[in-house]
Image (cartoon, rainbow, N blue to C red; front, side, top):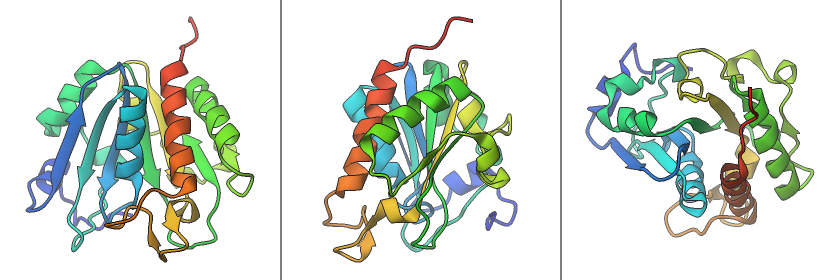
Length: 211
């Protein structure tokens, strides 16, 4: 989905209320450039997973009254000095996204070009999440628009490549509060916490295969 009217990434970043956040730590990086109301809870998960793992992170949050979804292939590090700084520092990346609005969506999808990393992240998520959230790493089972394999997708632009993680609405929803799990005043739910710590564990233990 593209509701930006053809805006560039730089133009989206320049809008009032849009904020970038980054931390440079290890050479493993988390991304969440559809944060705020665009893909709810993704910025929270990426930021907290990076903190727990001592990993690097880059996120973009939009204000609550605006939810512009720019296609990932148009999110270009060269249009943001902050994002470029992160990409100059990292070797591998996990881009955190959310898909769908229907509350029956439950599959966790792991796309991106680095399939070894996808299996590694997938194994950690399978160990951490209950069976109601099946983790899919087979690209053929992931809808084409969610596979994240475009070469210009930021998930694939670090030196070692990376993965695109798509989280379902049900995982990001707080059932008791009837609101998204990142709503003001709410603590992360059990499923969100499990996702954060699984991703952090995956980042800490990632040992790329020797080619």
